[in-house]
Each structure stands twice: as C-alpha cells, then as structure tokens.
Amino acid sequence: MKKGVLLALFAYTFWGFFPVYWKQLLHVASPEIAAHRVFWSFILLVVFLLMQGKLKNTFSRIRKSPNKFLLVFPSLLIGTNWFLYVWAVNAGFIIETSLGYFISPLLSVFLGVFILHEHLRRLQWLAISIAAIGVLIMTIVYGQFPWIALYLAGSWSIYGLLRKKSEFNGPEGLALDSAILSIPILGYLLFLLVNGNGSFLYVDIQTNFLLIGCGVMTVLPLTVFITASRLIELSLIGIISYIYPAILLLVGVFLYDETLTQIKLIGFIFIWIALIIYSLEGVMFRRRKQNPRI
Image 1 (spheres, rainbow, N blue to C red):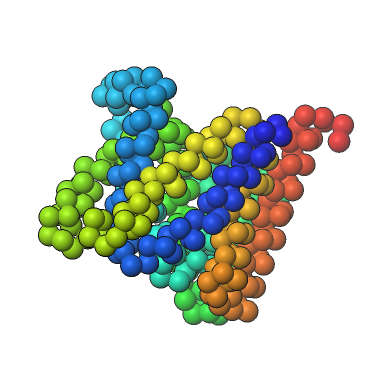
Image 2: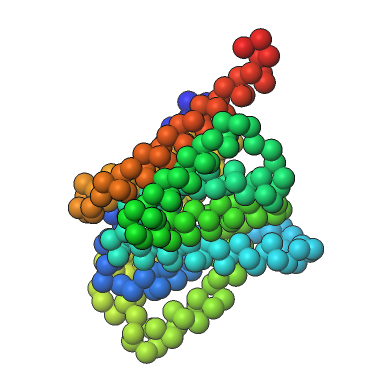
C-alpha cells in the first residue's frame, strides 16, 4: 500500500507540473504539439505492449470487437482533450484547467447517475449541488462561462466512462486511441514537414527533443498511475487525485503569474467544499459498509 501511495503521488505530481513542459514549446503551434504528443505516445505504447508480449493479442481483440463505436469515439474525446489542454496552458489559462480537473470527479459521479443509473446518497447530491453553485457564480458574476474547464472535465469524464465500458483500458486503450488518431495526424505532420510550416526539424535540436519527449511525458505517468491503482483502494486514489489540480492552480498563480480573481476564488471555494464533502462521505460510507456497528 505504501508503494502504491508513493507511485500515485508521483503520477499526480508529475501531471501537476505538466505546464512547465508545455511552456517550453510556446514557439510551437498547439495543434502541432498535440499531434506530436499523440504520435510519439503511439510509438512508445506499441514498444511497451511489444515488450510485454501483448501487441499481437491487442490487435486481435480490436479486429474481433463487436462495438466499433467504443473503439473510435474515446479517441476523439482524448484527442480534443489533449489539444485543448496544451492550448489552454500556453494561452495563459492554467487556472481554468485546474478548475476542470477539480470538477471532473464530481462530473463523473453525475454521469454515473444519468447513464449508468447509479444511485447517489444525500451528501453526494449535496456535494454536486455545491459544485454547481460554484460554477454558476463564476459564470454569472464573473460574466464568463468556464468552457475550458467544463470541456476538459466533460471530455475526461466521458472518456473514463467509455473506457470503463470498453474491453480496452490502461495502456491498451491509450494505444488504441493514439493509433486511431495517428492515422490523420501522421498526414498532418508530413504536410508540415514537406511544406516547411512546422517546427519539427526546422527550429533547433532542443525543440525536436521536446516534441519527441511529449510521448514520454504522456506514457510515463500513465504507466506509473496504472501500477498505483492496482495497489491501493479506489477511494484513496480519488482523494490523492486532488493533488493534480491543486498543483496546477499553484503553478498558474505563483509560477506564471495568472490572476486568481476574487470571484474565481469564491467559485473554487465552493468546489473545494463539495470535494471535501464528497470525499469524507465516501470514506465514511465504506467504513460503515465494512463495519456496520460504526
């Protein structure tokens, strides 16, 4: 369990400092960064599955899969999520990306109710309602709909839901997603290369290595996280996961001088309260289930 906690902390801390890496590529267009992230992730994941002896079996299962929708649609969600995230970070919206990943766990619960017909307990409904109030405050008073945060949260939550219902998850699922996205992306990258409109091989060696490194930056923390999730309980993973958006928020405010307005702070406070209620309720519910005398 100690090993699992340490691995989870590493993965979420790694993700939290993602903006520092993407900021090194400010001179590269966001679509090109996202394209390299997908392509080099695909190459690394293929090597990873090949080393584990799972590549042939994975492709065989893909061919035999009865539901092609669950093969294609998740890749579109994760692709747009990656693009928007990279664009938002380099456009100066790190705080709003952190908001998205604070909202994401609660939105996943909301989707579970309406799509999987799961039942929420009273305190869970209270948590979701408080979070919704926080979003409304930022929308109405601040006068700006937090579309970046909501799309990141929505696309990631729906992606997780579809991956849960799919036979492919973890590295296999991500390899499938990156393989599907790599078909049009490879054409896009070749177009940039031939026409000299891209940055890869046209700027400097550091840029080349940073673009290739997008694959490592994606696959490494994911592999660590999957290992951690197998060693510790899901409820503990859920609590540790809040480290990720918390670091994002701190990075945006203190490292890149983004402004955390009073209205945004009030909205964040509502969402933090909702997350605390939801987390504590989940812990207490599991304890009562394990020991009915409590």
